[in-house]
Amino acid sequence: MEYVIKHGTGFSVEVGSPEEPEITRWTSWGNGDLQQSFMLHTPEGTLITDPVLPQQGEALNILKQRAGRVTAILSLSPLHERHISEAARRYRAPVYGPPSAKKTTKYGRKLNARYGAAQPLPGGIQTIESGDENGEIWLYWQTPKGKRVLINADTIYGQNERGGMGGRNVSYWMQEKGIRLRATGTPSRTELRRRYERLDALDIDLILNGHNPLPLTNPKTAINEVLSKGTFEVHPSGVCTFMYLDFK
Image 1 (cartoon, rainbow, N blue to C red):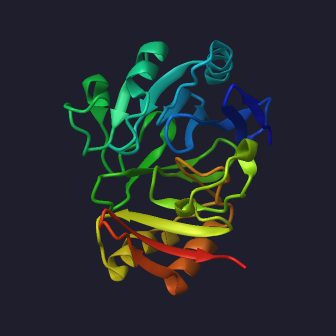
Image 2: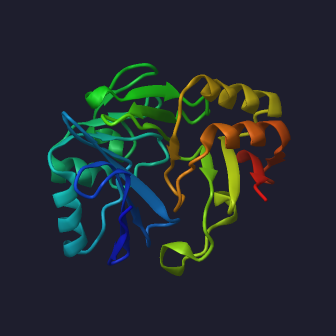
Image 3: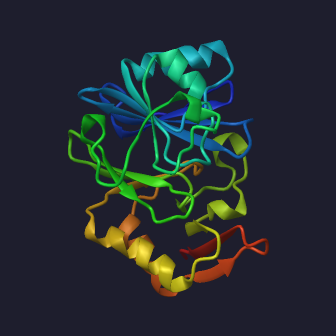
């Protein structure tokens, strides 16, 4: 594990080693809620998910060095426009978006292709429909060294550390010391279980997401526990629904 903060941007090798990284995470402050992006270092080149670019030149240079040859920019959710257009220009790479992406969105004008469920991406990365009404897509990748990783945007949070990431406290919806599943709108408990129980058929060693400081390292056990005995809660505004559980 490597962790460096440069001008409000934290870098961490989540899979592999600093010498041979397979997945690199970078986390940014100052652009709304704490946001995470990932570099997937495949044999064909690097794929970047939901990029948030640092503002300082030094941090941008570090990011460029770590990225190497970028073959694609991936958007996992229409809610994660972030800095897609700027990243596409900077790295001269095509942008892949979920089927729900629209050309009218800010990043949509840079959209080169939409990907659907079970459609392989460069590097052999698989796509899975999350079932969320906003059209979020999950990425599933077995790295060259055999680590099986699921990457999501906003639908699976868990295992934060309060006061981590330079002293920034976590938001309640990031679920400190537990797991929180999030769905757009007001689906039923039964529907949420149906969506997430599908993951039980996959071999998953690690779950990474678009906001949490820490990865979910016991994913199948954690998801099964929250589905069986977690709290079901609809946000007062009706904008989203949660199932969550604290691990004691």
